[in-house]
Length: 85
Image (tube, rainbow, N blue to C red):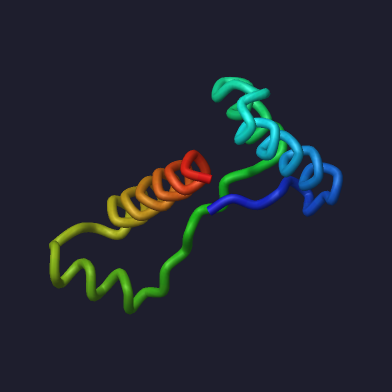
């Protein structure tokens, strides 16, 4: 999950403008990634203990592996959604 750095309206405005220009083809994918790195920060997803217990019973995974897997999946999902818009 991502949020704007320091909850800044300036970072939000810069990012939204860059995203609009990227969707029009004015900004390259590489340049857009730079804006994402500058304006956004990744927040890890924290799950409750009961969710981990359920996953552990079903799949036999430890807490750290599950946390890494979920964060990776969510990061990929956000990147895919962003590239589709």
